[in-house]
Length: 375
Figure 1 (cartoon, rainbow, N blue to C red):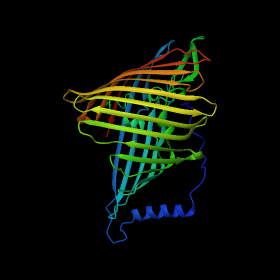
Figure 2 (cartoon, helix red, strand yellow):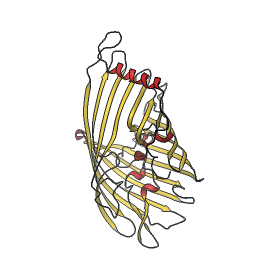
Figure 3 (tube, rainbow, N blue to C red):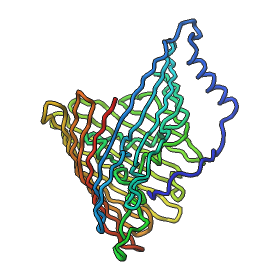
Figure 4 (cartoon, one colour):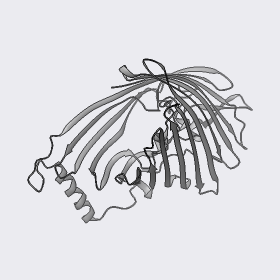
């Protein structure tokens, strides 16, 4: 669970020529205005969408208190275009392009770099081929199949309080308790920044929904990195249930294997939800990295304009960066949805603590207020 980042973009092997020809043929067939039986496909549909997500953070690091104006990394500002064409045979093909536009991205913002400027990123650029019977195949830049646990959240406090707790203030630095100066240790060195690590160029396959709401997925990316996931999203009466298990092979330079398991349950009548999750990684230097996450939420109709959500969460990680280290975080958030305007407003507090044998670090406290508008 160290945050040393994904490996260099080197492809570890190629498909055979026959496989490439087969995939290309399927794509051309789906794009063709006529099916093999002579029936016409549907007209292509195009959908444009986007999101603006701005946030203000007040950060107290044990030495100073500073304010920052950022574009959140928890569902960032973006523009998106989706095109799709369906064939009468049941096959469909889609293309997606998503451009992230972030001014003062939290991953770049720290106490000594408060205004890193605007960053443009291609978050999604992929071609998707699908069939209700055979599932979907995605080729291009997008999320790996292991991007599952953040989607389990049933508390209603996303995007303000992501299950990947490091994404709130990933670039903030801890203060060295001995010198009272900023250290080189950042939040994302110890707490997961899952989106940055799982958004990559890859080939991904998702099975069709199996009996009971189960889905199998897998993806392969550069440098022999691959992952797999099992999702179970049943639909019982009076309850919402989501469960997932993921495996990642060599997700970081110094981690060989990583597994995660999470479950989310919400009682619809009361709005109460519970989300436990566990993770474990095996590092090349022998570290056994393991963590436990727990989130409790309440979703209620307190006002007529939309639902109100409350949540508290805690995470505890061992050996994330060095052996004998302990990282903990606690968060409490409230979020209000304005349904008619597709607007979310939230505010909350998060505390990060890291205890390492090689350096004493002071706790870091973050007070965040933000708004997310989708269109």
